Image (tube, rainbow, N blue to C red):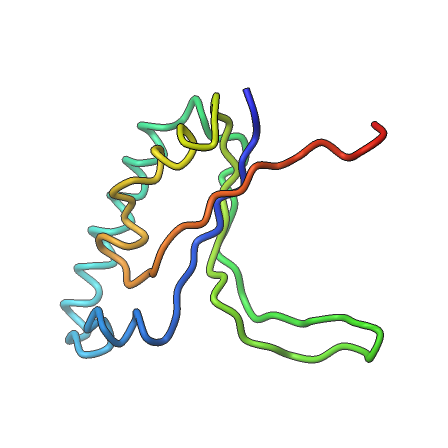
Length: 118
């Protein structure tokens, strides 16, 4: 089995296109409740494949030779899963609440490769 990092992606454009911000407070709360329940079901259904549940991601600081600065990107959260192949890992996220209920764009799945020489 291999490990894969799944990164939840979201943008202002997807949030706007979803109509999320146009929902009434009551409708948004109902959708959040539904989404959290669906996410919990996804976790329960894939419990054996999840290595690290991960977490939502907050504000970003980029560090480079030039120093540290606040930046914006489309990363909204992450999860680490184990699967037999890249395709099998991706299949775990088909129909995920991140983009079926919440206003997320997509989920990008990358294999966690071994460190060379170790």
